[in-house]
Image (cartoon, rainbow, N blue to C red; front, side, top):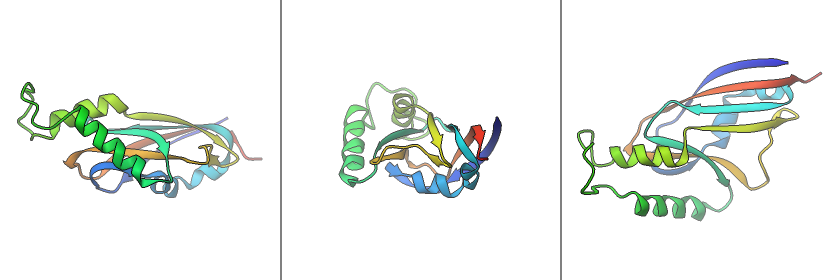
Length: 143
């Protein structure tokens, strides 16, 4: 068995739902060393989230953003955590809704995502800045 942990950085993005699969893969060349295993991704932020969903039609990302913005609007009059901006408390709730971690199977040196699956960063702040991930790989090395 083999295990390693790597710090990743995602580029700053505006608020929205962003496909980041390739950006993550580019920072994990060691995936190619694993026959089978697991990749755990942990987002070190409380105002963004991670999800897996369709990677082909950008309307899915736009509709997801529309829905979560309708579900958790800015300037909700009952929020009391408002000192960091009108987008901050909604961002915390969106982060809790989607979560900050994913576990993805690894097979033959690649993430074993389905044909139409990709990793989304749900950036919930208007200007969230770069995002940090901890990637932990665990599995059987290629022979």
